[in-house]
Image (cartoon, rainbow, N blue to C red; front, side):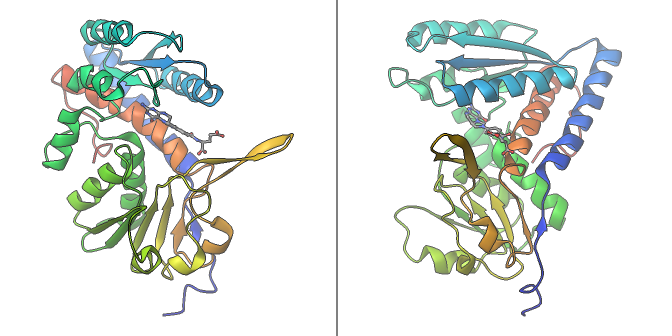
Length: 303
Ligand SMILES: Nc1nc(=O)c2c([nH]1)NC[C@@H]1CN(c3ccc(C(=O)N[C@@H](CCC(=O)O)C(=O)O)cc3)C=[N+]21
C-alpha cells in the first residue's frame, strides 16, 4: 500500500515523446511524397496580435516545416469582420494544397467561434472541434481528435498499455480538453468521472483516480492530498505566474512539488502535455491528408 510514498514519481518527458511522434510523422510525410507526390499542408489562422498566441503560431509553423509539410500562415487584424474570416475558411476548404485548417482560439468577442469552426471542412478540421468530429468521436466512429486530449491519451497508453477498467477522473469540462478527454478514455474502457466548478467533494473523487487529468486552468489547484499513491497525473494546465519585472513562471494545474512524491507518474509543466499538443496537430494533419487522398494513415498516431 505505502510502497509509492517514499519513491519519487516517474516524470513523463513530453518533449522526448513529442519528438518521437514528429519522427513518425516525418517518415510518413516522406512516404506520401515519394510514393504519391503529395505534400501535406497545414493552414493556421491567427486573428489579432496576442503575444502568447503569436509564439504558439510561430512554433507550430516551424515544426510543420521541420517534418516536411507545408505551412500556410494567415494573420488577420483584431478588427477583421466575421464574414471576411468565413470567406478565408471557404478558400482554405477549397485549396487542394491545404489538408489541415486550425483557427487559433480564442477569437475576438465580435466573432462567433462556433460558426467559424463549423465552417471548416470536416475532413480538414485538425483540431477536431467541428460538431461533426465531436459527434463522430462520441459515437465511436473515426474522427479527427482534439490534439491535447490525443496527446494525453498517447502518453497514457505508452505508460500503461491497456487502460481497461482504470478509474479516470478529469478535472474540467471544456470542449477542447475535458469533454473529448472523457470520450477518449471511455473509448479505451476506463471508468470516467468528470468534475467541475459545481461539483461537490472534488478532492474525495480525485482520490479514487488511477488516472487523474487536470484541465481547469487554475494554477496548482490539485494538491498532494487529492492524489492516490501511485496514480498517474496528467497536468494540462499552462498558467503564467507574473512576477513583476522577472520572466513569468509557467505552472500547471497541479502542485507539482507536493504531488510528485505521491504520484506513480506525472507530467511536468512546461515539457509535458504542451509539446505533445503540437506533435498531435502534425499527426492529425498527416491523418487528414491520407484520408482526403484515400490512403492508409500512419498507425499508432490516432485514438
Ligand atoms: N485552435 C486552437 N488549437 C490549439 O491547440 C490551441 C489554440 N487554438 N489556442 C491556444 C492553445 C494553447 N496551445 C498550446 C500548445 C502548445 C504549448 C506548448 O508547447 N507549451 C510548452 C511551453 C510553452 C511556453 O514556454 O510558453 C510546454 O508546455 O512545454 C502550449 C499551448 C494550443 N492551443
